[in-house]
Image (cartoon, rainbow, N blue to C red):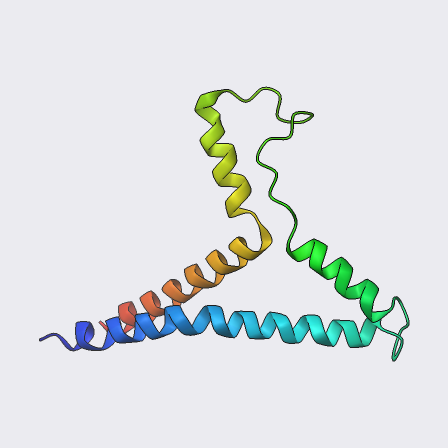
Length: 115
């Protein structure tokens, strides 16, 4: 039994669960602290409800698959590409992919350097 396989797979599984959770908690903490700083307590840029309304519409925008004003030259061959691009660039999905790719890069680098 290889030591690398014995230790790397459990570490990768744990990291694939921990990275998104830690990234989510860090993002939530950053958003909360930004609301405190932007709110009436410090800089008085906006109220708490205005901040969270704007944050919600920025973080969770509607996914528009086809916009007839912009995407009028799409044929059936490119439809899947545009659908995938719109889904993968949604802020929540993009954040998830970014942290999972970073996780795999970190674990892969550790495995490569150990070998």
